[in-house]
Image (cartoon, rainbow, N blue to C red; front, side, top):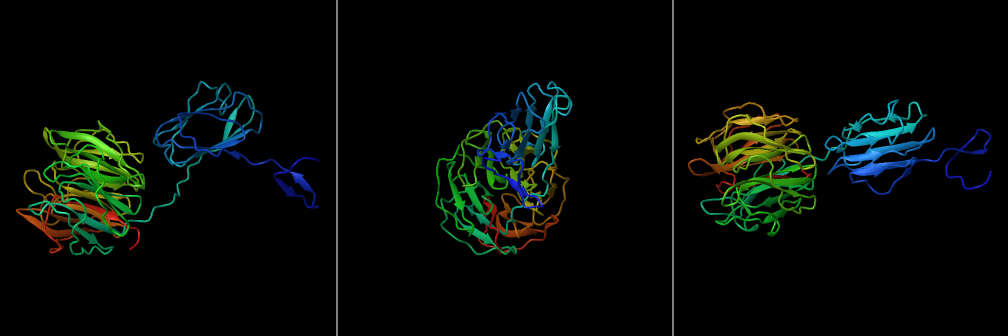
Length: 421
């Protein structure tokens, strides 16, 4: 025997015997819409942005093997399609459609013979995925006291609201905020009398950064939520002449992308929250036709779905937050009259019917996650600006008012940050 042995085992006598070498794992991640696969290779397939059609070899020998792995756990959003290229696949010719569309799936195929062709050794999904650490703290920021402010108030992992911190970026109101990057946050947009497109990043200690300008169309009355575990999305609002349906994605470094248009009914005064760990939901608001109760789900790739109607009492100027690990809650707002109702959202993004009597009725408040599995609503406007808060437990039950938590104001924004209690 001569040549290099790259894989071997010991026989009982101690004689080295050659065995089959392992797969060659292709070093680059496949992100394109097509792939021509080769036997003996393993491929990482990232379908974050598109479906991938995979063409198998036109000829194969018994024992040839190929493995495909869902690199970004997105096959459920954008599937892979297998073109068996003239050979059979599980005993069927290549006129049959072969698709795989389960998040976290691994497809391991081996060629048998001309009759059966390629046969999956396994096509299982990995359901036990790593779970990101929960959000522990929150921050309320900006808003109006009668004039615009740049105040912020930190919220501890126990739901205790701290005193005011001043001077954290341009004073404004009717902005939006959300977490991103697992443990950080971002405030964005709003108005000072003029519409703004600026943002302010929040680090994992709750420190608000200086203004960053030029991040999409200037507007106010929009909302924001995190998606995809570590990214975020701003959506909808009012640009000074009309309601809009545009969105702006935020990557895990806090960089805001350019406008994406045409994502459901244009409206403002809506709210949004994260649900199911990596998805988001926008709901309610006011359109050019009046108040609405519609919602729009956001996939873990940041794709906004079409309108779903009939999700509780029509209202706007409400707030929302995630709670209980993978669920969410919308609460308060105005129908023309102030309301204190809430609506829970399950981990499939379905909004439940109204629950009434959850603290002082008000509008223009903020909401955020804190404490790992709880939420907090704070501030707002009744017949004047208020500084009260309401805690939400891990079952989505809203507690009675807690008053005296910083300067009374409304039309601010709130977000959860930090994975450290």
